[in-house]
Amino acid sequence: VIDGLQGLVEVSRVDTELAARERERVGVPAKRAACAEERARLEARRDAAKAAVEAADLLQRHSESDARDKEALLAKLEGQQHQIKSNEAYTALLHEMAQAREAISEAETRILEAMDAIEQRRSEAAALEQELLAVNGRLSQQERLLDERERTLEEEIAELRKRREDATRHLDAELLDRYERIAGRRSPAIAIVSREICLGCRVDIPPQRYIEILRGEELITCGHCQRILIHEDQLRQAAAR
Ligand SMILES: [Zn+2]
Image 1 (cartoon, rainbow, N blue to C red):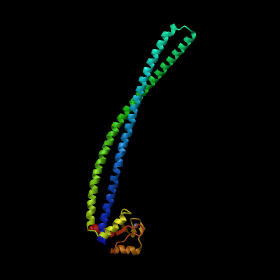
Image 2 (cartoon, rainbow, N blue to C red):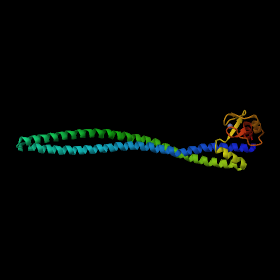
Image 3 (spheres, rainbow, N blue to C red):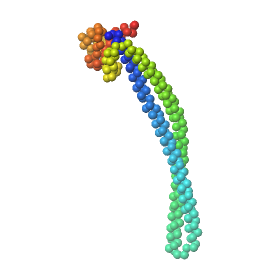
């Protein structure tokens, strides 16, 4: 049984490493997605700034055309001043002229506001473009490292699987089966016993069970955490061989 146990310890070590590598590999896509998301967020802000420049530019051109139309109207109305006969018509004309002047003034205000917005949003877009350049450099580097890490993990996982195969080849099938069942519930499935304590759960081992462990004639599991128990001295013997 001790030989089998020592074999299981190796399997358990491989399983622990394998689980860590597999966990890390499963996390890689999320890290990659986080890079893409950071890039997309920044691009969206830059695009919004560019769209705002275009909108302000359009508003400026519309307002300029508006102002020109109203100036033409005002000039036409001013030309009519001397042809007016009645006071009523004259008052109406003055009212129309005042309205045109007000419309021109409003259009000019809009033009100035649009020009301000263009300047502000354009420099914002340029700053974001710069930031994007720097962030892209950093993200591309991160993505390269992730690709590399993923490749390394896959190689290591393949290697560990091979090591596991080698370690289980000469193991008793029943022993391995018991191990697998425990490993399905808790990892690692093997605990070392030191000073009558199970190091898996830190609970004292009853004296009778402790004696059985030392005897090494059958497989003993911890009454508390159900892990397969191996005494530290037995482990040391294995390492010495
Ligand atoms: Zn235990």
